[in-house]
Image (cartoon, rainbow, N blue to C red; front, top):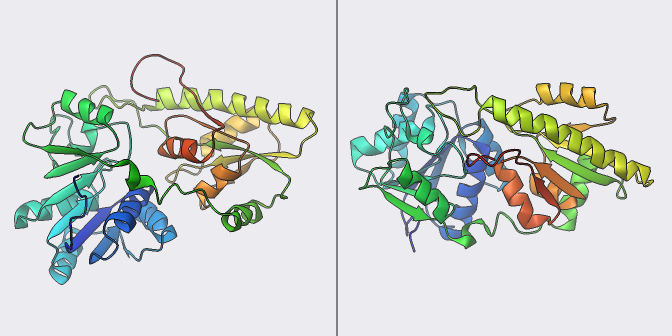
Length: 314
């Protein structure tokens, strides 16, 4: 079995986004709890890693600050996430290449696979390839190969246990605390909508989740959520609709959509124990997000919307 962190390695971790931070943190807890590790994290990853109890060095990072941290720590392995665009992850890949330090990348999502390794232009498709990349399942491995992933690059599968610690059923204390955060009674029925964002349409980049696709799905989900809440209220239940915002978004557009749908008392949240939230919910609905995939492990009442047979997303 391939190891993300290796046995006893001094590992310098660079991770930018919340989802990648959550899975890398869970892997670290399970696979290498006694390794010596330093973590450089963007805002989203810092939040999810903090939830798991990790101390991190928060970005943003310059090339100089990355170099200085590597000098201070002296890593013999680098583990990074795989977000789009330039971030500490690619800064560490550059440093690792220069110093001959083995690099492993963990992909925490299902969309925009080749784009995660590209340079500033789509023509630079494999600019940031590590020594080894870890993906969630065989289908993702096959897709990467289909996109032309370099033949000498190693693609390994994360084991099913890598997410076990992350997806343990939240205990009653965590679930009650979420209700206190939301300001709802223990008897209130929660319907949760997992908000997702897209990327500006661009034919050269060929995003799996362009705005045109994501926004159409989210508008439809608003209507679905409104119908669910209306049905529960007609049945005489005290029900609240909770919109779990994408970590990078303030739900501006979707707030407008809910105003149009005339759904009363919507609760918009971001900084919350998302696993306890989905476990407490009567139903969880969404489109294509990693949280929705994870929610299915915690709550059997999950609905994922796909309006077309085309493409891998959602």
